[in-house]
Length: 337
Image (cartoon, rainbow, N blue to C red; front, side):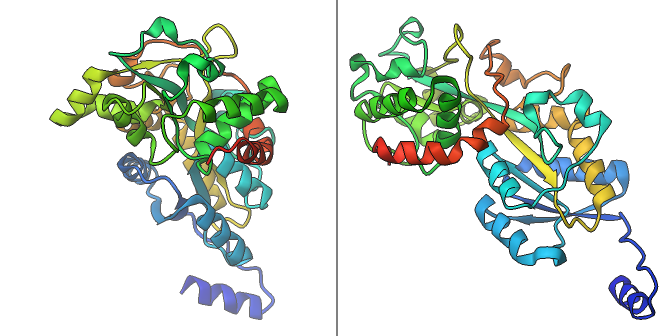
């Protein structure tokens, strides 16, 4: 009915009434139960109903592009800086000016003009087999290229955004030449060809298929939080280490979101972004999915707190996207499949 009235108004030469902000259309590539809690709490606080479309990040970006000006999407939310960058490059975001967001979200965790904001972070850590590796043997990501680690290292495929973004960060810190040497060194030390997700890498280390693996911290946190006997056995075998504490710090990536360029409910969309930066929503990110909150004063989950404090890389997250293309080409040259 609302569309019919708007159409009649346009036909009579009258200005169409803006869409009422009583609903919000979110396109999300996140697939975590915690997000359903976020959407429910947002509706409780604002009365705004969330309509959710889920899919892989690349698929959703393409869908929004194809829908063009008629896209119902108000918000695109995704994991990893690479996906935010690709959406940005496709022109899918509009800048959002919010004093609240700029105040509570650190500058390095949002796009400078407000196209997107990070709402949770994840650390790229090293997990190790306690029977074969001592923490004092670990230091930096680069140290894993040493001959002593030959046949002992695991990672996901280079087609994965986590690997690409970490490589992009190293390019920013070390330059392409040194980063390519690092990538070739890691490939030379693989225990097997990359396969599976981060959880698979952790379990493979526990099973003795390799001695160390590079993974996102929250995958290990999920295993730690599990009551399953098989997961408890993994935790007994595997430890977690934050790399590069004497250098630029452990690599950090994000989950983030932005308001789409043709958002029909822009006001509601901005309210949602501001809600994600509220203490309540930040606590949900932390407790339900073991991600690190971005707002000061909100504690990580009790599970994550067990891992201890660490120094995280403060490189602006936008740099990860800017270097993504170079990272993909570099990983291919290095033979990282």
